Image 1 (cartoon, rainbow, N blue to C red):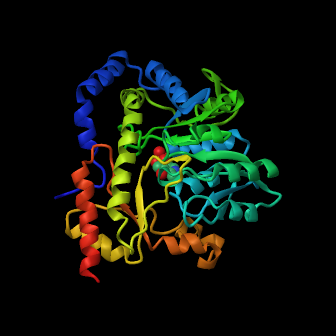
Image 2 (image 1 turned 120 degrees about the vertical axis):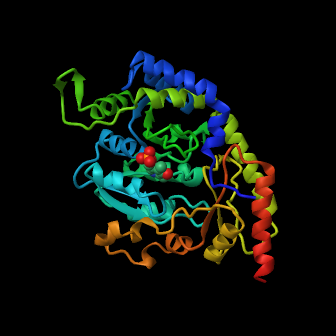
Image 3 (image 1 turned 45 degrees about the horizontal axis):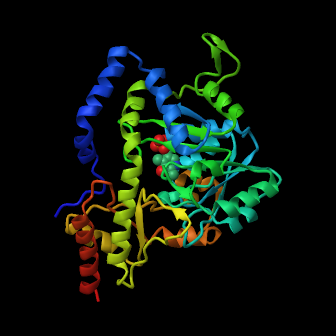
Length: 370
Ligand SMILES: *Cc1c(COP(=O)(O)O)cnc(C)c1O
């Protein structure tokens, strides 16, 4: 049995007819940048996120950059970022002109550790970027309290957490501004690069829309210098076709995760993602931890099962951050975790049989190595 890590072709097959019509409408209309599809998507996505404003952008990394600029981050401002994330999270801070400060993650939740966030705050700290990594909501109550106490802006990285919630409240409501990626493999993915930020603050939305469109007020009237990062019409049309399916796809991901939880529960060498009763985890990734990650991954590859590692090197230890001179003891949890993480296949079209086959292959690895 060959099991891919994700299967975007299977998703397309289910949507093909509708997708072709939606794309044709944009092309016939020649509404390639912004336009009616982009506007319709922004309205629908804001509603889905439970907030007032959505600004469509070129990708999720730009969403973070634009959001940081919109909350006023600039030269000399420190922004705290979790040590385990995709590099876009920290890269955006630098691109916005700020200074990256890493904090360790909680060993169980695997998102920003509120205690280490508090420890990293200086008089120059202006914002924090909680990342809801793998689709697991970060501890937003504790992070929110710290942010309030120190006057920090909260820019959420929701690139892996479309439709996630805490105690029934959509995740987007927990930050000053929340940033989404619609990279094709994300839980809601375009057919190319796309992103958005959502916010309840009209000033943030207004600045973001101008900043992402050359600081423009009207044609050839530019109030300040910005960048070019706009949602294009074809990507918006794709997202409009997919958005109504997001809830069902998310429920399917959660059902698959429950199957994995049960099937892997009897293997002492494997720890599965913690389930918090009041968190609506959306399982962008189903990430287990095990001491012999590399040999398990090789065993699964032999069995035709694709896996991933998110991420093999925690951000402070990347060459890109060598200048910060960090050592493993600075981020003990993230450093220990990077050798243990293994992401198993999970996507809405995956069958129960495929999950059982993956779990069976993991079992057979530990029987064989005992
Ligand atoms: C995908 C991702 C991003 C960046 O999104 P792009 O659309 O690829 O620019 C940022 N943060 C995290 C955690 C991501 O997974």
